[in-house]
Length: 254
Image (cartoon, rainbow, N blue to C red; front, side):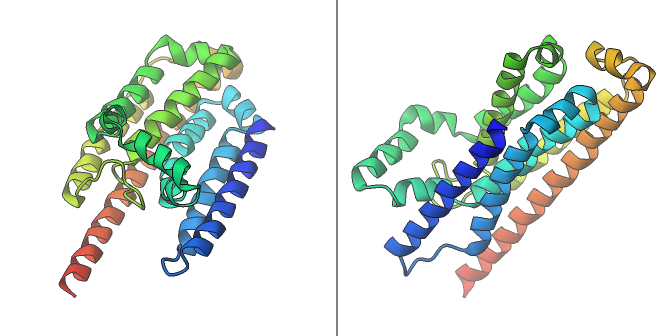
């Protein structure tokens, strides 16, 4: 119940910030589609972390993979499309805005926002969680499950920041670099999904105890979800970056 309520509160604050931004900077505007994207992203977080979904994920590896796809590949880029950092800098009083801008531009944060950091952390969390004792332990411990989700979400935001360059950008990345960044990610999700799908035994005893003989088929479904859905989302992101690059070039020539 906490996650959906928290998501509603975040959406309310975000919408209020957008309204204030439009009042303060009437000539700049703030696209409605960005608001819808961010609201959908926050709602996806709330839904994916809700109690019913958590219960389903506890009973099915495939459902758990859907949850992870939403947490890492769907919700974060949608939220970032809503330019929350721009609002955090533009809407509060100047002193508060300077603090936010100062933190974002600090050398330590500048290093954290580096594309290589986001890429390596994202890949490391993906492989490290699914092929380490942490995954099984998180299924048995509510606290570890929260830690696992925090890892996923943190890694996801750091991964998507170099791709979704909107509003205030802590670390600018060129279009060609963004496309290469995504291309290098394609095989990681595919190989992980294939490794899970092709495993000859049930990787997580928890699901074997819950599903019995159906655990292997459920695991294969989960691997296929990670492989196919993850690949589709990465490809869609690649094409959107390419389209944004083309649009930017046309504007430059106009």
